[in-house]
Every structure is written in C-alpha cells, then in structure tokens.
Length: 200
Image 1 (tube, helix red, strand yellow):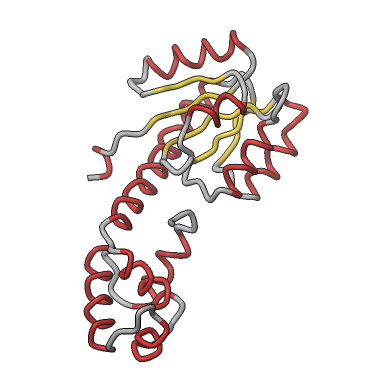
Image 2 (tube, helix red, strand yellow; image 1 turned 30 degrees about the vertical axis):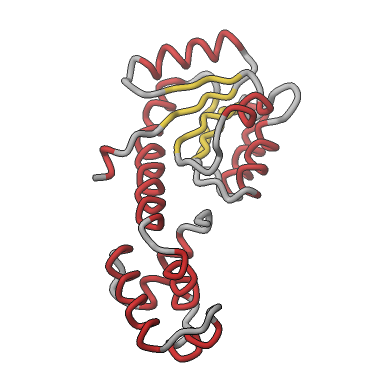
C-alpha cells in the first residue's frame, strides 16, 4: 500500500540555524530527513530519480532554489518541491508553483509548513506508487504503453515496434499493461501517462 512506501524528506537551506530547527521539527514528526547547505551538495548526494519531498529555500548563496527546481524539472524528477520564501520573494515563489512546484511557505512559518507537508508527502507517495507500477512493465510493454497512450491502433503498433510483432502480441501486451497500471482503457492509460511525465 502507498502508506508503506518509504520516502525521504530533504531540507536544502544555507541558513544553518534554520536548517537545524527544521531538522528537529521534522524528526519530531517521525519523518526520515536529510539536510543540505547548498543545491550543489544536494545534487552530489541524492538520486533525483527517486520520489520524495524537497523543502527548498528560494534564495541561497551559490545555486539558487529556483535553479535547483529548474534542474529537477529538466531532469523529469518525481521529487515534490515545497519552497521556503522570504516575504520579498513571494512573487517568485508563486511563479515557481505555476511552473510545477507543489507549494510555498513564507519563512519562518513552521506551523504552515507542518500543515502543508502531509498533502505533499501524499503526492510523493502517489508518485512512488506510480514508479513501482511502471517498474512492473517489461521494456516492450513500456514501448507499447506509450503508443497505446497516444491512440495508436494494434496493427500500427505491431509494425513500428523493433523488432515487429503480431497484432495478437500487442493485444496481449495491452492487457498486461492495463492490469499492471490499473487502467481500464486507452484513454485512461493516456491520462495516467500524462500525469506522470517523469517516468523513464
């Protein structure tokens, strides 16, 4: 079940006092947490292809929080990003949300942070579940899934696959894909794939 999927929460902030305070706060909630003093050290240590949550300071020396977020986005990372923003950076934080960040919290409002974290963690668990489902597909099933998801018919899929196969084989792959991803039809599969653009 989703609630059993282990996730790590990352804190990226160059303010040591705030970083320590957040670590203590989040540890007290029973969460697995790692902290980093820069975007550079964060990327050196983590696998951004793994799901989790990032509490990310918007304004840092060196790599800015926005630059970290842009790199995660460019790498199609499933990590859920929650920005920490000073009052003067609220417009930038809102723009980041429009570009795909989960949400933002004005520093140092830890109460608001704790209110928003459960939903962010829930989204991260949902992404982890999707990754687990996708991992159950064979490489050929993933190829077929992407073609089915954009509306291609079995005969055409059979011809464009390398090596080609029969329409009957495609139909078998389609049935396996629907079963493994809990999708009922082509349209539902297309929506599922569109909702998870960070899948390999």
